[in-house]
Length: 295
Length: 251
Image 1 (cartoon, rainbow over the protein chains, first blue to last red):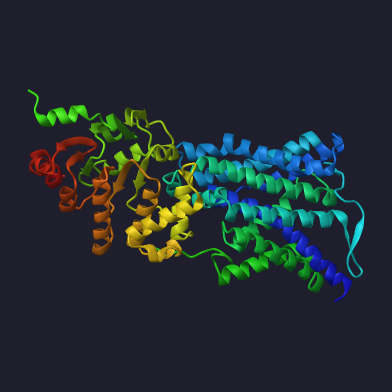
Image 2: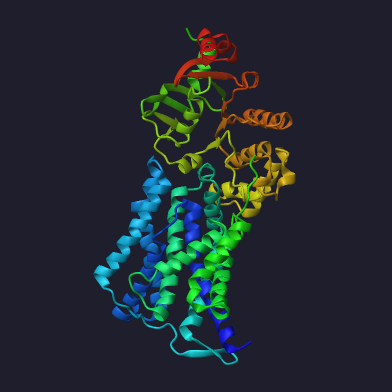
């Protein structure tokens, strides 16, 4: 296998892992709150700007800047839930899903234009996590930032899976996702679970944004393309399925890079949709979506 | 004049009190100044024609719908302004007509989700699993311990929901049509369990359209019609009450 193909496969997997971070957060919010967060790309953007703020403006080490950026986006997510989304659950508004769609769409536009107005239409470069390149396999060299991003993504994805499947909190989140009323009559605070879900998604999106920013820089609409990919992953993996999101993210990353190698780079963003269409024709509930017995 | 019966009722202070509870959806008064008390260990049957407010009353107790007026207290604590999970943690277990189970979890995971939320400090995961196994066995669904709940039948889901509710160790149990769509054999299992719980002193409110069963099981019946309480007495009294007969036949 020549180095170019190998590098594309490795790059595809790295992108898949980052997509995974974004899609996991979307899936968790959707699963628990039934809200499709159209502002998720802007959570990512905020993560990038936060890393710039912490590493360049405040001069902190990037390894300190990363958790701070993640926490900042999580805090912003919690604020969003508390102020904008909670009325869906605590008051009896009609058509809560539509309300949430319009609201998160509006928030997305507001944040993009807010960034444009305050930071300007410039690209910001936060400090590198790991400058320089490293040999990976044979003649294949990768930038330190890409390797760091991939490694952190693996750690964060595994940590998320651990929380979801091995802790009481994860059980409570999943219970809430499967039956809100069932969860509350089991003593689980469903409103608290909403907040936890948004915080968790904020941590992951903040991490994705911060990890990508030294490589691709930060600008107001940096989150737009990645979040579209994450929506494809959400449907591909099966709406609300956590393992589905991770596996679909890796598949998407690989399909994009291999399509660029063997077909054409120009259609990079089209391949994911072709896969999506194919999967939906064969398994309309996605790769890991579950069909349920109707009793 | 003090009869022995009167003395007993006044001496046992009520554990559960509903006072002038009203609930309006727009102009429709789903509950209209409903008041009644229960003493500990009572098994109360709640009857009434469709749309009379039975489920709405249970939903008001569970804080699913906020009251427009009036108050509800349990163990001397106001519960009508608590949120839903706080009502559960206050000791009130609720079963729904359509079982609200967690479909992608196994039966045991369903029970653990509830068990963990209200566990006592000293209770380990093993204790909870052990208690869950006992409940599944007592409701004859122990063979489904590791079965994904969503693959079970409606009746089996109802039993699972029952087990999950009991996992909370409720001190007041609200049963909404627990026998609806359940196989007669499984109904026998549930009835047996309800009788045992009642003998053990659990306070229970049960809603059912199955009048022979509910009349046979309950010590006391209250009847609702159009959101109003129209009768409160022993099964024999309520069965003969002309207002109740009229509500059922005329409604």
